[in-house]
Amino acid sequence: MGCLTGKYQVLCLLSLLFLHSPSSFSSSLSSNSQCSALLQFNNSLSLDSYVSSYDRSSSHVQLCETSYPRTASWKEDKHCCSWDGVECDKNTGHVIGLDLSCSRLKGAIDSNSTLFLLRHLRSLNLAGNYFHYSPNSSEFGQFKSLTHLNLSHSFSVDHILSEISQLSSLVSLDLSYNNYMLIETPIWNNLTLLRELHLDYTDMSSIRPKSLMNLSSSLTTLSLHSCNLQGKLENSILLLPSLQTLDLGSNPYLNGSLPKSNWSSTSLKFLDLSKIKISGEIPEFIGNLKALKYLDLSYCKLSGSIPTSLGNFTQITDLILSSNNFTGSIPTSLENLTQLTLLSLSKNKLSGVIPACLGNLTKLTSLQLVSNNFNGLLPSSLLNLPNLSTLLLGDNQLVGPLPNHLVGVVAVEIIVSAWLSIKYPVTCKVDGFDVLEHINNLCALE
Image (cartoon, rainbow, N blue to C red; front, side):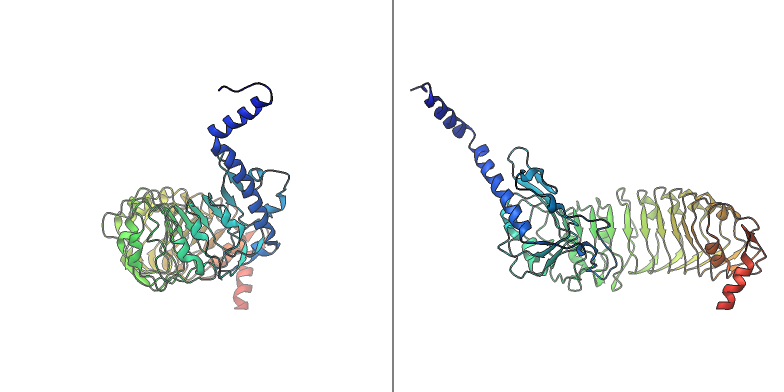
């Protein structure tokens, strides 16, 4: 029979809505319960204005330059999809994203936390807070839809590593800067979709570097700075085709050499291999990495000459090759690095004159050439660099007078410190300041 008139029409309409859109009806209820879960989660924590300034890694790296309590604006009279840090699916109303980074939160997250009721979460960021060690927090494995997880600078996660390793949908994982937490087994073996992995300042002394080859060939970011990695570094990790960021710096018990061939990545932008025992020379074809913006090979055991192919790094801003055993001269091809802001070649065995063409690097703010065997005059072009604020030339064989006229904005004290080791300086005044007298006073103090 068809629907009748009057009050029966209302009942009929409600029944049709229920039959044809049950998901909308149930998702509305689910959305309300998730809002309640968020409020209870917030109420289980406290706010501490000092939380985001804590350095829990002994790395002197602070995540939060600024912080504010996102949850302080959460109000029961407003739907949680409008709350700061909360993202909802427009179709289902499910809470799919929660970003409470640098929110000054402090407390414990145990297995009874209502956080784990948010089963539809795809992105969870709790970085930059302070969560106490909670040995019963074993529910992270329930977030089966999670693709992005950031617990850096905030969490005692040793006890939940096995749970995290089961989150097979993860694309991005950041557990860095958490009191050098111990990682005893490769947690990435089951994370086949992983594209970004950040484990800086963890303890991976039990992990063999060879296990890194189980990472996806589609990996774009691998950051394992100061992880106490030990053993031989496989060259193939440097050749992953999709890598944009590779940071293995400050792992002094890691050893290896740079690839001898096939190093032709067009995507690599950030490469830090500092403080690793890398023997041999820098291969000439490193110049194929034309997208590089940052290169740090300091404190390695590299030798030979600096390749002229470094002149291909036309996008690079930071080039750090200090504390190695490089010989020969500075290649003039470096004049092509017009985006360079930092050039550090200190503590090598470089010789010859300092190329005047470095004066073409107009964005340079810091030039560090300390402890080499450079000789001759300092090119006046370097003193014309408009942005140069640090010029370090000590412990070389430079000769000649201090220029009578300093152009640009180089600080006088920087120039003085740079010239302390230069022979035969002459009297020079800058804005009425007697540089030679200042040099003599500094030397007297020594």
